[in-house]
Amino acid sequence: MVFKRLMQAMGVGGPSVETVLANPNCRPGGQLEGRIQVVGGDHPVDVSWVSLGLLTRVEVESGDSEYNTNQEFARAQVTGAFRLDPGQRYDVPFRFAVPWETPLTDLYGQHLHGMTMGLRTELEVARAVDSGDLDAVAVHPLPAQERLLEALLRLGFRFARADVERGHIYGVRQQLPFYQEIEFYPAPQYAGAMNQLEVTFVTDPHQMQVVLELDKRGGLFTEGRDAFGRFTVEHATADRTDWAAQLDGWLRQSLSRRGLFF
Image (tube, rainbow, N blue to C red):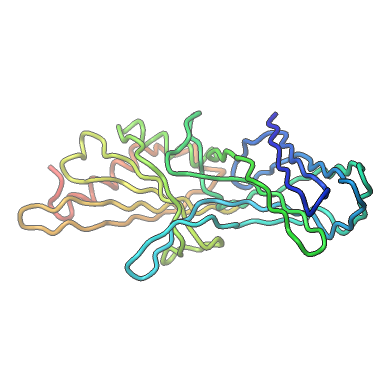
């Protein structure tokens, strides 16, 4: 159980806030559970609301420049208005729904380099909002996502990094205003033909759309360019496919189409 103090005075002698997560680990489409403890200060206050927000770090392209920003992509108000007397403790249990398209942060016990995810608590008193700090949250892959990632590892790909980019993928049904790219170094058998492989999952309760972006190496008479592959995997049937064979076939076909595979 993780306890992280989120305390900030709301004016002189105002209330303090502490968020307690029962478990900081979750999966897309799952829930985060815990409680928020609000303790009154030295004078009575009227709290307008307490809310939670899930945030991640997003890369934004603006013209010729890029910058990173924290973006909230899920929010839930967990209380209405209430009166808080001096020293009074007000406990708020919560269940926070994690969106199906939430980016992954952890894989097989390892944090994905480049990823940040946190649950932020906000409390409003007299129109002043206390945002506090973020409670770190670890998002693990769904079984169907694990199947594909395991297949890449079996083929010899090595994880490089991950990031989240603002925008929508053309032709993909997408709810959130951003998407995650998980980057891999090529397996030895493909190393002469590509620089990296990027994988994106866009998931809903029934299936996930998998987008593969292949950064090809340019040859002596060919220009390097990206190749895209996209397919849909149902959660219920993901374990019926030999994904290592499927991915290997797509990669070889894509690379040989332009004479970039030996």
